[in-house]
Length: 228
Length: 222
Image 1 (tube, one colour):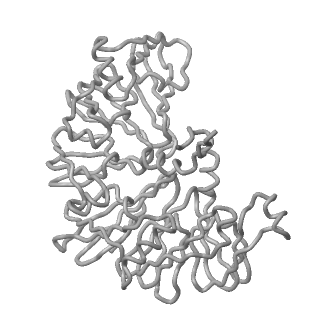
Image 2: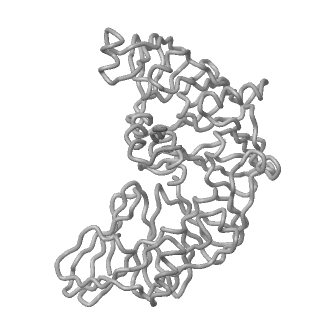
Image 3: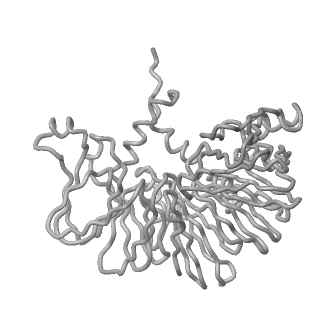
């Protein structure tokens, strides 16, 4: 399996080249082009067991209940193009099996068939700000695709790092973290407009996005007609 | 006519340079700036009926603008509505199909018309697509990147992501999985077959609109 990131601009996408018995999984609806020998199956599970429950958890996390699974029907070469909804970059993260990777809900685009994806609820704290505090946990060996709203900055953590939750794309499972406030008190934190923060500790990599999708949504939403 | 497409693929802008007496046609509203010494004529190009068809049926403008240079070397900048790519094709007495709204600019020898696309279009972007014919330069655009795919056999494009395709290709609607698709409203796909090129866009305005939807304010009951 080989992954090509298409374009250098603001609207990147990924072309996944499948061969033989390769399988790839994505958010349902992420596929925008494919060779005709690619079979698109709807599934609730990635690798492993607990399909239905995982589907329900994904629903709670604001993701879709189903995921799409791609493989070639003839065992030959095939391709699947995957794209996120928002403008921005697409990155490939290679999982080596040593540590899992955790992706912020809206940033997961797809992953190789040998990677198990689970949805993790990050506690009630998220409800204060309305931020989606559901993470997708990826375990196994193979490629994973993440998307970002805007550009991506890869940060190496050795010690501590604080980031705003809405800018999180993905982080390496070797890192410990706590979710908390940015400023000294909750009131100050609320006034700072920064929402919730994730404090990382340890060693590992973190991907952050230049723009926060929820912030963009909050700017656009009020300009549209009300919903019933 | 000389042309340059700048700032591709994200914020593409088309700049054309005309010689004296040369003309270029655009969708109304596409012109962003122009030099002094250009006559602009607004017309339906092909009659009221054609204009009406274009406007009502295929989401393009009723009027098209024709820009004619009075002196040599004048420039016009054309910018599409959405951020994204612009592609150029030279047609030699050829035909090309475009998705609704994808037509940007062409030389005078190229005509743009609405074409009934059958009921299959109902699931797509409406019942009509654009049919471009003639000889000359054509520029089309989309939201996101435009990727060119050479089809020899069959190729699948998600509904709403096909920007343009050659008439040598035929297509039909299909679903990812028949029964499950019906139950769980799965993707509707366009299955192109034959030999020719299809241009695919990497982002969908529909998907973006659906994404924004939940951010709309709730209606108050008072």
